[in-house]
Image 1 (spheres, one colour):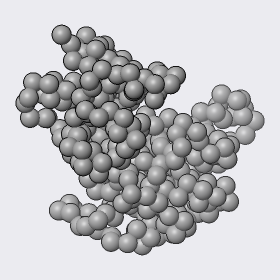
Image 2 (cartoon, rainbow, N blue to C red):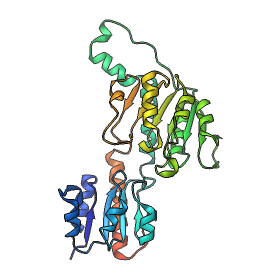
Image 3 (cartoon, rainbow, N blue to C red):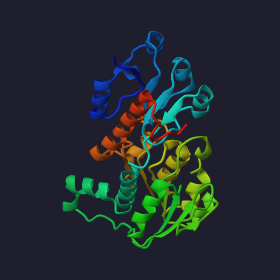
Image 4 (cartoon, one colour):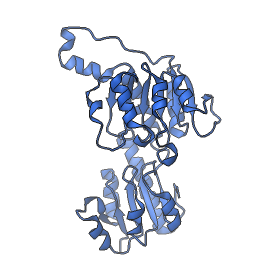
Length: 310
């Protein structure tokens, strides 16, 4: 007899197929009436969600026998971890396997924004190159890079940036044993760099850490990159700075109210936009899915969980 698993959100298709072969899946993300579906569930002890969708206190309260949430993603800021701990609900995520992919996109966004790659592509396709020459752009080589968050992904970004001979500094809750300058004040960091990359976790501790003051300190020649969470930025202040020219440019993979993107950003040539896809390669999504599968298998067999968060 198969165990029942609540699918709070959809996941990578091959992962879904594997889960569907091992368990009886109940698709909350497809339900027209979520409350009615939750009320009619059999005994559910396990659930799968994604980093973006998470699991709220209200949702967990409606699944009274829930014991584990396996998150397809490294970020768990959308899961109410305090409530999960109160209930004794275990939470797992998928760390490490997406570090390189996210760091690669951060560098890609830096290059695309600084070298105006997306704008230049449109320039050629539109035929404008036949009539004029594009303005010059700026280089990355030997520029100053600030990273907000020096965890796995921040360190991977720094290692890649070192190949561009960039001068690297970082901000975080505390200094780490890394060969880069630590700056305890985020505004001071922004004022001292040409590129600022947000690579910190989401959640209450980092909400709005990229404030209006930070954005203004980065200035009209600065470039901001966000591969963290939309919540870490004062998004209205960011939009205002980009529209007014107080910030030089931005490469954004995440937003405050995904998939809705502030309308003014869609019209700006100095902004490169991505659909929250930093980890979106088949190789990485497959590895993330395997961790979800492994965590559920361990839970149902009574073995230690491979990647527990709470």
